[in-house]
Length: 171
Length: 407
Image (cartoon, rainbow over all chains, first blue to last red):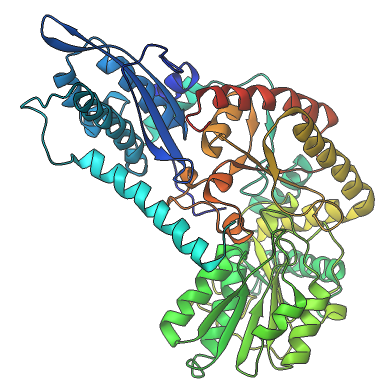
């Protein structure tokens, strides 16, 4: 098989992998956003129900679907818990590092799981404000590190398949 | 470091029933093999096999006995043409790097031809030698089942080809190459080209006659025959010259310095004895279990692809399948929680985040390779192990598919 690496997951990753929370589509989601792709080997789809209470945008509920490794599933699950009930602005401020720490510290080779989950969330937040036609001051115009990384991963795969198609290597 | 793993193991718990299918990566060692090794740790033959005293000679005796047995099982006339290394990886390194080191002056302009699905311990040393000395390394493509087409191979062999390495049986997808045809093609295109085959996954599963096949170098590995890890062997035909990439004090082996690991060699011998004592019966027994496992999975789980050939050209202990919409590493963890131990060719279980090069070489898309699971069976498995596995797998796959974002 491929070159291997030891992966001592934290007990927390294993526990959440066993019993993920907030699983599956959310019927009345305001926003559905995903990051990654099957070809990349991991993909997270977030369903966000965002409501406005007294002029504040609040994540009322979040659910997820994840195609990926155990850490990927755990990262998506714990993120939905972290953002539940939070102001959207506060949810936005969650970084991949904070999520990784929340999981008991991911091994470096699994950082991208946390990046993917946070990347999906940030895309979702942008999509929400685009949808309602607002641009809050705190929302930066430039892509965050998580969004950039996700974009690069997806783009790399697309380029790979484009070149393989050109070579006739792929159906 | 260890605290984290300890916590992980505590959180995992020990499942009531446990079935180990990860014989590709490492295997348990049967009691008889352990018993055969034990005396050589402290009772006898714990000496250095090339020092002149009684305990050294006891040690030398078992080294020679093991070579003689291996020679017999592979149709090798002269057991002295077998070199012990400390793993299959080392044996492949000795073959590839050792040969290219010896021929390093030829460097530029000479060609090394290996199949695209070789073990990394063949591909990496070939690339390494090419970086050092300028050899050209050519990867021969395989078809969708992993076969090297003999007619196509012909076009890759020319007067500049000095070394060809093609596995007898692939370690991941179980493809049994038409090795005789491949050797004949190589030898007729260029009689001077040396042919190495990594037979670690063929040994004790299909009959091999080294002299009849005209093989120049052949690798086997202890743990692939239920022997211990830490011992491998390379057959080197007379006249094929190597320079060892390892340097140090020589012992029995002129090509692999360092003291031979005699207890493990004793274990290797016992393991080979067991595997060859009832060859046909054992292989057939395992084949039936493997067929039951593969058919059972295909009957019970939708959206499954078989990786590698089906039928007589697939080695009888190998089952490799891709479960679509499920990521393989997650599935290995899920199955582990149920006491079923397997490995995956997914990127997520790898150091470089690239899926198995073997699966990509047979034309699997990334997402198909990511969901692959490899089972290796042996005569230590029982029918009820397969029943239990077939009971667990559909549920495990279904749970992860419910979570999956890939619809």
